[in-house]
Image (tube, rainbow, N blue to C red; front, side, top):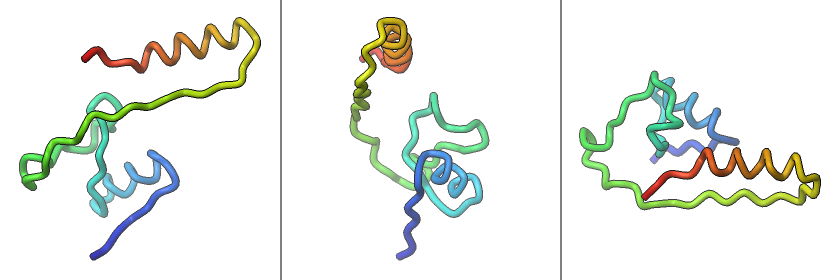
Length: 77
C-alpha cells in the first residue's frame, strides 16, 4: 500500500492534482482542478471536524483582524 504524507495543504493538493493521491478537502477550499471522487470510489462521508485558531496577539487591532478572519472561516451548521 502506497501512502503520501505532505507538509501542508499545498503539498497534499499538488499530489492529488498530479493523480497521486486522494485527499479530504472541503469543497470551499479545494482547487477547482480537483474532482469529488467520494461517490465514485464508494468512500464514506467525512465526519465533521473543527479547526481552532490560537493566538498570543495582544494588540487590539491585530486581535480584531484575527477575529474577522476566524469568523470568515466559520460554517453554519
